[in-house]
Length: 84
Image 1: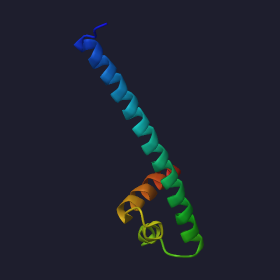
Image 2 (image 1 turned 90 degrees about the vertical axis):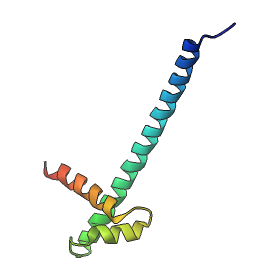
Image 3 (image 1 turned 45 degrees about the vertical axis):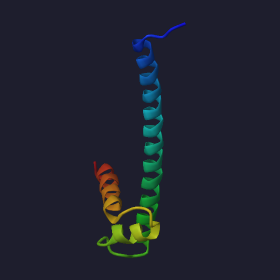
């Protein structure tokens, strides 16, 4: 049985779409877990009586695997959702 170029292209496209969907799902799961961790650390930092200024840097240093800028973005997104 011989496959045409169109059939082969469809098989490849389906495989690529499935791989892309898996990668997106993994990235969303990691981002959600990181957001929860950042929120927990921000809450603990606030309860410790530390000022809001510099909180993203303190959290980034505790985590070690994420930049201060990304922590600031996560906190901004989470806090804007809370205030809406």
